[in-house]
Image (tube, rainbow, N blue to C red; front, side, top):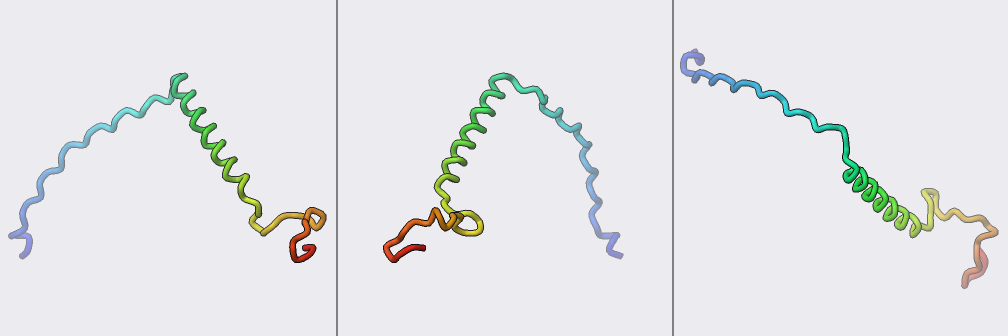
Length: 74
């Protein structure tokens, strides 16, 4: 009984063709820009790593490398 009072569904619009994919060829200017960006990221990453003095397991130094502290030897 509910089908008598339901509005008719409108027809779907026609399907559009997908856009053409961008060309995989990069110009020399684009390649240079990509290299410049990657180099900058590597420089920043290296700078951040050099400030970390511990590893995932804690301080990574040998007993020989341990220095004297104000309270005595480690």
